[in-house]
Length: 423
Image 1: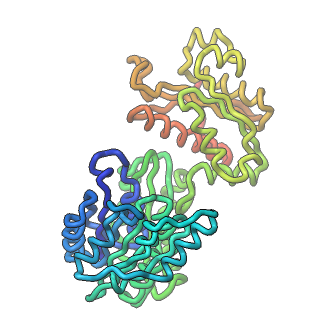
Image 2 (image 1 turned 180 degrees about the vertical axis):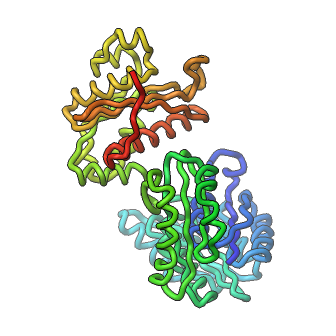
Image 3 (image 1 turned 30 degrees about the vertical axis):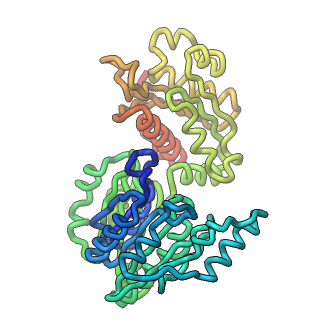
């Protein structure tokens, strides 16, 4: 199956809104084994949207459109789709009833302009929207092709995609191939995409079914294993020996599956081992604590944190010896150790985790460049410090630092943490 994406909204062309929907849709399509060659953006212009839909329909089996399904006059996606295929817009009573029920649950009256959201191109099927008023639309066309229209609001788009669109695509793929397509995502941290590719290139090259595809993210790499088989069980049987081969080579860098981020894996380990943690942060400004506490049940392992940005705060809150700061500086292995020990003592936890670094864009020197970060981890058996150098702007350095800190904690909990820096 070949798909194409169209992102609708003048705000996207003006740079007022960042398009995250196309990245999400592309990822989900890739996981399903659907090819994607084109992603387009177009403003709120009925004629141009219709022309782009016609063009995409000629090139692809499936066209997914995001945006332009709201209740206002500049929401024109359904009208443009109807124009593209010479269809009328007709009222869908089921969609109207769902919109009315949405307002009833909120204790509000439905505006008349919301009624236009219940009009669909003739032959279209409404896709239930559990997060908002704009139903999605599935328009099946001759030659086995289809156009799917989704709201531009990310939470609504994702809800309809997961509940309705993905099951539809899986069904179509199964009917086309007489089989199911099943994917498993393996997530790795600590190696770049090129390094992983070098280590497993022969495995990737030898595969026809399953296939293996690498995807690089911000500081991590994912490998998608996709198999086609008569049913899901047979697909899993094809995937498992390939997964075993990959993990035999990449095992220390593997941390989880699917959508599970490092913080989820770490939280599971902390809870299973009944370990508690406190965090001392400088350059990340609380980002590590945010990630740890963003997981439900975090009160079972996360006790407290301290953002000690200044040297004075490191001394006053964490008890870092001013002489350490004077001799080695705030960005040093010695300070990272002292911060980890200090936060562990302050919180009374099993583990103390710390970071101190230079996020930039200023503040770097030849000896201590922008992106240099030191990490500390303190536990009953001792304290270790680690040094990392990251590239990127300020936000990217902070994000990569937070991921690296979580990976250090993960490796400690698994007993595979390497030796730290020497004093």
